[in-house]
Amino acid sequence: MHRPPKACHFWPVAAAVFLTDCATKAVAVHDLTPAQVPHPIVGDVLRFTLSYNRGSAMSLVEGPLATGLLSLAALVALVTLWIWYRRGGASAGIQITALALLWGGAAGNLWNRLWSTRGVVDFIDVGVGSFRFWIFNFADAAITVGALLLALVVSRQPSRHGCS
Image 1 (cartoon, helix red, strand yellow):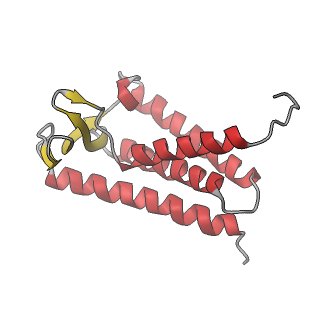
Image 2 (spheres, one colour):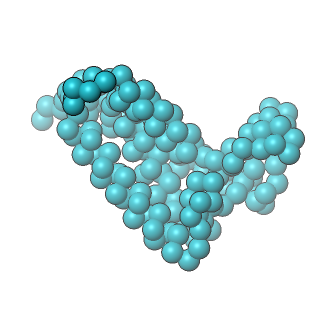
């Protein structure tokens, strides 16, 4: 069975993101317990602080329906990304990398959300003193990089509507 070049690029990237996310979350739970105790890595700028997020990024969606709604949204995102990947060209370019980063990150957070009763594991804590960014995980970082790459690719594509 012949695989198109984009499959030889997409799936290894998506699988690497998913597996790295799952592994780093497992290590965080094992080595950083109890939760909410900072472990300095690079002074106060980078710390590992175990946290469980039952809601969405930045806690925008919370409450009793959050897990179901966020899981459904992740499934819709995975299907949408899959369709976008399938409809894309045959080359393994930046767009395929971006889609793979997004897919692997969404799959990692969905997997964690479905199998953890405490919520999605977050542990990367960046900031200075009391000025901290939200605590996040490897999947969140992959999703952010993938979204930025995809925005860059889409912004550089010629308009299909003839308008500029």
